[in-house]
Length: 438
Image (tube, rainbow, N blue to C red):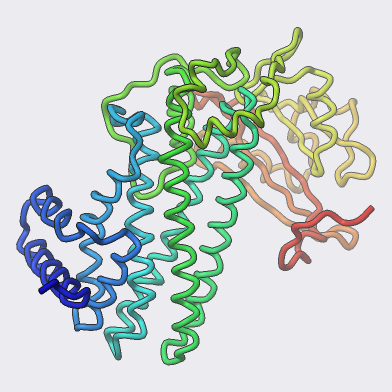
């Protein structure tokens, strides 16, 4: 007699319970992974949450079941991995992106597990699961670091080659994911644990976010990453690796093994996309190549440009830029001589070319000279990194800050004074995301 679906599911549940016991006993992960693979044979990834919810209904703690996420994701990862991503060394940016996606998959499963369990547990158990859900939702905000590295470090390289539609689509979906994360955190802040409608809404919002996260991982692992591995050179990956620590990572750190070489930035890339590269791309990306724009041939560095640490600019542009800033700056050099200001009519503290070269203490009222000297001395000694004041002046609230200007080696080069009228800024509330009509 054939086994009914219910009997089949009960057998699966018994096997999962046994694996949970083995996990608690510290059994070998790889051995359990193979056993779990057999348990899940015939179970789709979308049915696994149903198995987990049934375990909760039978009295197994959701926090215990969460331990299965590592096993599940280890198996799910195999179905999400493209053969073109094999052999990536630890420390390579792609390896880091992929390991972050494993963490995102684990968290997406836990999200559904915790939110779906709230209505099935009572008392302290519900509070414990809710606290875990709230902690997880807060952590999910950190996915933004993963997205920012894609948006600002990786996307420019494929845009340079004319593939601009792909980043636009992905960026839009990433913004939608972050909006869902914000919505979930706002909902969790209400904490109405005894309200069935609230618990139902929590589950719905969490499930929607979980599916969106899995969809993003799929798009990245199966489409984006195989494509960029084909397109980008080691120099381009090196530039990404050198820049990414400032952005940060989601629950992982780069491994050791792969070593960055001479970095190549997007504006230095001169190659386009070859027919041979297109032939090796995932099918979904091949279809997108029909929307390719012409390769971006813009030459960034012009004759006469100044090379600054973070870019290139002409003297004309630099002067105009500094004079356009909505605050005034005054620079005093290491010899305590006033060397530059960006004052223009309408700003707060009057400056004129007659003060250029003047000693800084002579630029201030005698009554405040001792304060100026102390600030400069403490900047030079390294004792202080900022001095801050605010005053009322003619109905305006004026914010004044001083910062030491230091070279790459920490050498003191001077002091910059930054003055800003913050009267209207103090009145700002809420958000403004749209441009006013002209």
